Length: 287
Length: 252
Ligand SMILES: Nc1ncnc2c1ncn2[C@@H]1O[C@H](COP(=O)(O)OP(=O)(O)O)[C@@H](O)[C@H]1O
Ligand SMILES: [Mg+2]
Image 1 (cartoon, rainbow over the protein chains, first blue to last red):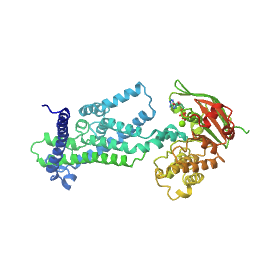
Image 2: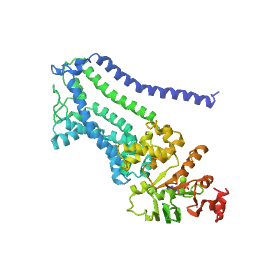
Image 3: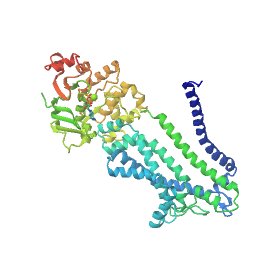
Image 4: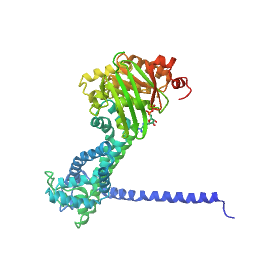
């Protein structure tokens, strides 16, 4: 005799649970594998010297100091450009814009920007900043390119942060006689800062790790000195890793894994910082 | 009677097709408490928001008629809203301090209007807290988050935050509805004290409260001002049968 329906349902339910659980587990495997391999094989290569000296012997030996500094400078400059524009756009969209065709166009642009492949940003930066505006291959051109790339991240996060500030804050402020701008400035923006910071850090993490956008705009193949201005070329970690992994024969694996490890630590700690900041903000938020 | 603080003339308000206030005319005397009563949804809050023109935040709200503040029409497009809202302030239904320190809550409006700077700000803070009876209990805790106060203290703080910008008229929209009876009694006592200096318009759906705190009372029903008179008269000898039905609890 066939089993009753409820027993069959229970059986199917168990199978479904196991399959769903295994699929979920599958995502953990690459994460552990990547982080594990690079940590195990890269940590040994990292020393104080590796972090603070110039590469030598055609990058086959020595440290990655200029690539680290280059990435830090690049990323800082990116934030200088992206943050004010991102926040301003988010404020305009949430606090001022009415729902008309222009606003919809802007939103469409933001959504599409975040879907553009990073190599396209690289070519765009090459065309606009390096060649047309004549900045040359430089920190400036690279930072502007990266800024455009991470703008959607910052705008979206800032908009969300601004929208999560209760409407009542705006009402109180206006009812006390504050102007629209004073309200935004003093009764909305301060309470959105943690969310904006979270988005910004995630954006920085993305900018720090990308190779394609800096390939044609800033990266020096080999520049065993620090850039002396924003119009100078610079080395950067992701591009350096690409170069020593594909372009130069006979490089000890420890150089590659060491570089990969440093890049990974940098990007992961940025993401971690964003996660912690968000969690603390959620917990502390009282409204 | 002296010149009214607020004179409402043929005021109409609609939200899109919905007519929320219908031809309201009334005069609000200075330094008195005027209560607006009526069943939920009759337009009490809407009327209050006409006085400081907060209805304009609602896109489809349209207002016609005139409101005179000390004889001056404040419904003009040219009326500066910043000045108007400084003179006519509002206390909301739910206590709503900013998630900032007690001090920063009080300093908010002072800074916005540049009423004081530097060391003069703490003076205004002290003054405002004293006016609502919070100075003694809180003077050593000004840096604490305002959200850690009791609801009653939060509502008092919100009143103090308003007093700090030196308004003339206080609009209170059911200021006690989130409070327990003891806290309510204390806030009512405060309202009683405040009318020495301020003109107060209070919305309440609690008739006892209206009877206790107000000098004049208006009864609104479905957007119409049914009756407006001295509180004593409204509660002892109402002229309109609908007012009588409401205050004797037969509907609402
Ligand atoms: N923003 C709004 N849009 C549309 N209708 C509204 C809005 N605010 C209030 N109303 C309507 O106006 C009427 C009066 O509301 P309200 O003034 O809040 O009443 P009360 O404060 O007396 O309870 C109600 O019928 C309500 O549904
Ligand atoms: Mg109401």
